[in-house]
Image (cartoon, rainbow, N blue to C red; front, side, top):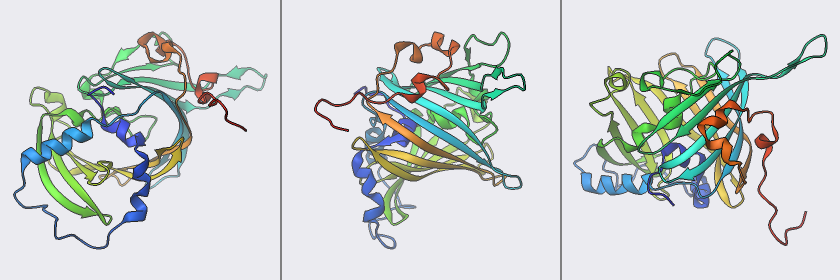
Amino acid sequence: MPAAKSFWAAFLLLAVASVELTAQRRHGSSPLDTLGEEVSQADGLEILNAFRRLGIAGEYRLSFKLEIRPRRDKTTTVSGVLLGTQTTFGPLSRIDIALEPADVTEQGELVPAKVKRLLLQNGIFANALEVDAWRSGAEEARLIESDAFFEKIAGSDFTVFDLLMPFSFWQEFRYEGRTTMRSRPTHVFSLYPPSEDKALQEKVSRVRIYLDEEFNALNRVEVYDAEENLAKTITVVAFKIVDGQGVLSQVDVRNELTRDKTRFRVTDAAIGVEVPDWVFSPEGLERDIYGTEVARLRAPAKEGATE
């Protein structure tokens, strides 16, 4: 497993032991809680580094829906597919989101889906490429600069910043201590954006994360704006077993300023799939995954397995 991992990878696939979280909850706070006290930053760095080493073995596919739930408007839903793999620099993900589904004209002519394509390199050298497939002349991949990380995706409250989670490797951090969250012992960290990235500092003052102590699993992220106001909360809600691994099946993103919410809900998942090499290349952004056979990849049948 490569040394550089990402929070988003840990968000998507956890160790199977994580599935036992809801069955092992404690009641009330613990005398071992240290939040608000002086705690060892060296111990905190050890915990944080252990979390940074988390990752996913092999290639995988997630079919998902984004349920966009504005506070004062009706819910809308967009579909998408995510294919992931590992590289020496960290997890690499290709994501296609169908902003508008395929349709048929009155003359029976097919209107292709309006697809946004993303290629995300997580890890210490986090970066992102995008293609808006429906725009004329927009087939060439564009680098997404950090000042555009916070633009909404498909009208949802998910952003490239949420998907890349570059704060996982921000060097400046403060370990705040141990607390009890949802009856689980949890470590709390604040991470601060690099001083050289002024565009980022204009958006974010810090990101607070909550890590389950027993399984080192991320269960909550809080993003604070430049004025130290809580701007966004990302919460792990549910997961299920797929091929012996815990796959997150629901993540909620809440805009704390507007009270709007977006739900990331996995509708189908496959682990150990064989993804064509072009999928993870910048040139591969010239081609859709959504609506093709690649979006329905399954893991090869195991030898001796029966239907």
